[in-house]
Length: 148
Image (tube, rainbow, N blue to C red; front, top):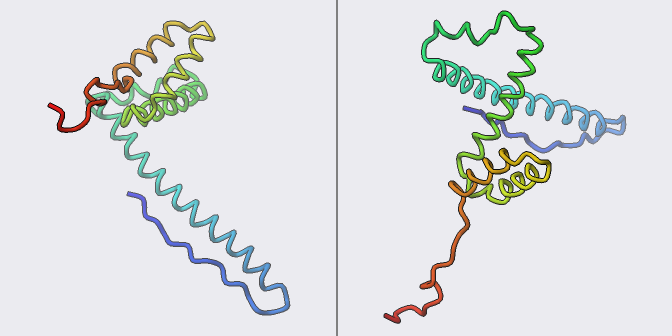
């Protein structure tokens, strides 16, 4: 998975020739390199998940060429891929613990409805009710313990 490299704090130089500024510039450069490395490592991890998903959803490697869409402008295919990936990742994150996103789902359903997209609003609202229902209060919750 992702490997994290600790980043020690900068130690300013003692010389009067601008060593502190050089050290600060070096620290920015070093932090940039470390953070870029982390992003690249995470990107490789995500690429593996995407490759896994591609084959898992198509079934067999010999069916993968159909995902290339040779008759469609590659720029258009890339734009579709990027959009679908963003939507899929967002939906995937929400599906893990949907009850944590109850308020967001309710807000989004409202935005869809306000914009006149009633079918989309209903779809989001239905999903929210199924996976993140309102937490009801049971009548016994008000009883004092040991009262039966």
